[in-house]
View (cartoon, rainbow, N blue to C red):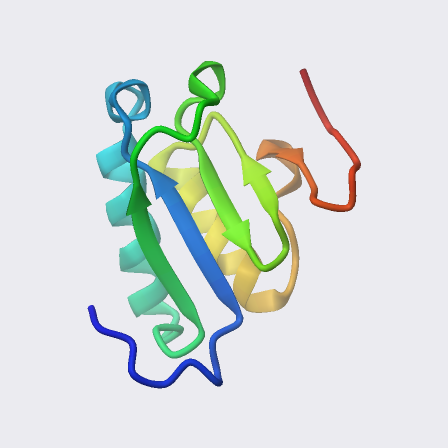
Length: 108
């Protein structure tokens, strides 16, 4: 999907579609996130991009949200849906958050 108007953009969701993440439901996570964005009518301010490997294979499937710089791991289709719901309300999906750009680490 092409983006013509960047002004309303609040979140850029990078979804790992590298080999390990794809073996851990990466495609299903991608589709769940995109489906929930449509369901929430959030296309104007949440954009997704499939990436190749992000180098955190032990956290597969990995999703990164910018501009916050939050890294989420062990994502499933259900948690992908929950992530979008949290983004819409301005929250984080804490159970899957393993790194916040503020430097706070919740994990491993």
